[in-house]
Structure formats: structure tokens, C-alpha cells
Image (cartoon, rainbow over all chains, first blue to last red; front, side, top):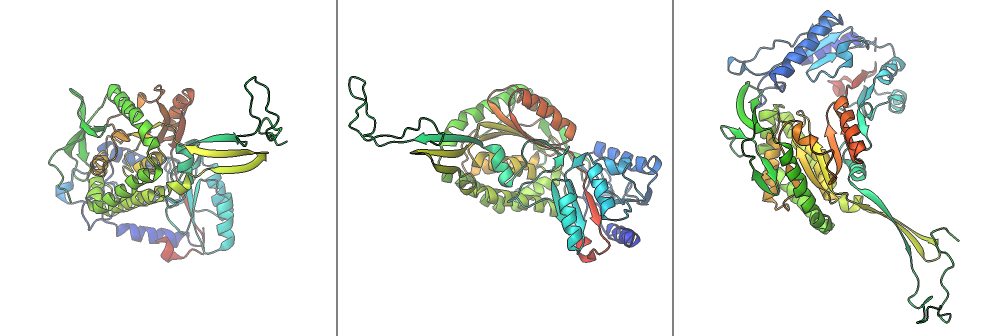
Length: 224
Length: 272
């Protein structure tokens, strides 16, 4: 939102600068490497495209983070922040799989919701607010599978289903919670009709033993 | 904590046994933290994948008839073993997937919570009954397992995706062939040790390593009843098409890009 945009950018830059990049097994580190040399090269290309093609403003560049010499061969990308981003940009549309954030200055909640609705994917979206109206409107209108309010990652606890909507979910069911139960089981419906053992017994010659008690006239599960 | 071997030889786990395929091609496994090779991963063939399906298919009949409380007892035991080896499992994730150890611990904790949820299966799986549909007629809805499921995980959540697929699948009575990412297969090696440790019947969970070749064997095998994947949307659509033609159900979690909206009244302490 315009009122807090500059302060927000300052704060995330300051917080990101405190994040140390290094070995995944070093307890004094906050951000480990990416998965492979190829992944690093791809993420760096995404950042290059953000600078050269998208023309977003790179306010924190994580392309060559400093790491100790003994782990120089690792695949490191540091926190990277773009501002002045727009929804048409590649850095906003593509799933970068790296520590890259693009900040878009939106005018109001409706503007933010329009951007979310325009996405082909619909995994999750979060809102940070203290306002009940914003909260309820966001939950109702953000067309994603998982919404977070004042949480950074909208992944639900395993009691509840995990999964997106739109292009983020192909197939029928979501994972975990009742979604997991639905996916991994199939329904069977049994229709059971019962009668006293004495009812409607056939006699040896095939005729009905009319002396027995009468059974229901219903011959199917149609209520009669 | 178990010491990490000098060279991690990733193996398949089929029918409760570690299995090596003679003459199989391998690819290198790297430690992304320093770029050094730390092991190798077999590129299993379709034959191995089919053997894993056959093993799951054999195990299914008895497993689905195993009383539900006994099936869930295996989940309780799996959870306890994971708690006991929590640090070992987190370490395994931090080595090849290279998620930072603090986040790797979080991922293990989340899987433990999924298993805790799946321990509620005897309640969650209950059906419904409607009496008096007609005179002396009752309708009953049962939830039953289907058979063999197969699932493939992406590199970025080697533990969580196991959690999304397997505890629920086997808890309700199915059996499962799982293929980890060839970039982060080490966590599942540790889980296979746990499957053996808790005495999980052979063939209830089989783990096959490799690239796309083992998964290609899933689509046309009539014994496979459903396919799960977490990955990209284009891959999800291809799987959905192939599985759909063969009449299999799918759980396919595709691509994502999540917006985070910061309103002007946000509470900063909650944000950063």
C-alpha cells in the first residue's frame, strides 16, 4: 500500500542484510544454498532478466554472496529484492525457486485482489492487516486455494487440506486432512434389505409359505 | 545421530529389502553447500519400477485386511521412530537437499504432525448409514482403499511430500510406490530404515530411485490405481492426461507463485 511502501522496502532490505548465507549445516547461518549449479545459473538469469528486460529496480542483489573459501564451490544466491515491479514482469510471473522478492506498489486492496485474480496459478496468498473488513474481503475474494492472515506462508496444519486452485491444482483432491482421506479411499454404497427368517419362506414345491409373516412390498430401495 | 557415510550409495527399497539393480547407470549426488559429490543415485529401469508395483500389489490384499488399529499402530511406531531420530532425519535433508538445518528440523516436525493426523484415520475413515430408506432397508456408505498408489516428489520438500502421500495412503489400507527426487533422495533412505525397524510388512511401501523412467511405467499398469505428484503444472497436466486415459485418479499439486499483501495498518512485529 502506498502509505507504507517505502518503510516496508527499507525494513525488508534491513532484515535481509542480516541474513547470513552459507552451509546448510552451519547453525550460525540463515540461508543455505540452492539445489544445484543449474538452479543457481537459472535463478541468476531470472535476476538478470528482472534488471535488463523487466526494468525493475534491483535494491538488493544476491547474485554473488560472500561465503567462506572452503564452501566456494556451493550454489549460493543471497536475498534479492526488486522494487517498482509490475504484474506483467517475468520476475513476478515466473516461479523463480530462489530467494528473490519483487515488490509491487498497489493502490488499495481491490488493486491487490485484481492482481491475484489475474494469476493463472492459484496456490496461496497472504494479507497482513489488523482490519476485519480487509481480512474478510481478502478471504472471500482472493481466488487461491490457501489464504494466510498475518502469517507469511499460508500452508495449513495437516489437520486441514493443502493445495491450490486454478493451474496450481490438477487432478481432483488436495493433500492431507480430509482431502487425503477422500483421495486415498473410494466410496462404496451398500443397500441392505432384511426380513425375519420366517418371512416369505418358499415351500418345497416353490409356492410361498403364506402362513409366514408378510414382508414389505418394497422390491427396491425406492421408498414405498 | 548416525554418522553420514563418506560416500552415500542410494539404493532402492522393495519388498522390505535393499535392492541393487545389476549394471544400473548412476548419477552423482552433490552436497549443494560445497558443490562436492557425496554419493550416487541409481537411474532405475522400468523393470524395477514394475517389480515395485508387483510387490505392492502382492502386499495389498493382506494389508487392507489388517485390522485398522494394527495398521494405525504402524503409524504410531513410525512417528515415535521419527521423533527418536529427529536430528538424524533433519541432517539427511540438510545434506543433499541443503535446506538449512533449522528449516529441515521444521520439515521433519511437520511430517510428524501429518502422521499424528493420519493416526486419526479410524475416526476419519468412518462411513455413514441411513436407515429406514424403505421398510427394512438400510443404506450404508463405506470408505475403502483402492490398491496400489504411486507418487513422485520434487527436490524441494523430500520429507513433506512423503508426508502428504504415504501416511494417509497406507493408513486407509493402500500400498505405495514412492520415487524421491534424484537430487534429494537421502531422507527416504533413512525412512526405509525406519520402515524396517518398525516391522512394516514388506511391500506396503516401496521406494524406487531414478529419473522419469521409473514413473513412466506407472501409467499403463492396471495394478496402479492412482498417481500423486508435486511439481510443475505442465508435468502435472501430462500426468493427468496419461492417468486419465488409464482411468486412474490423480492428486497433482502444480506450480505456485504466492502474493503477500501488506496493508497500511499491518502490525510490523507480525510481518518481519
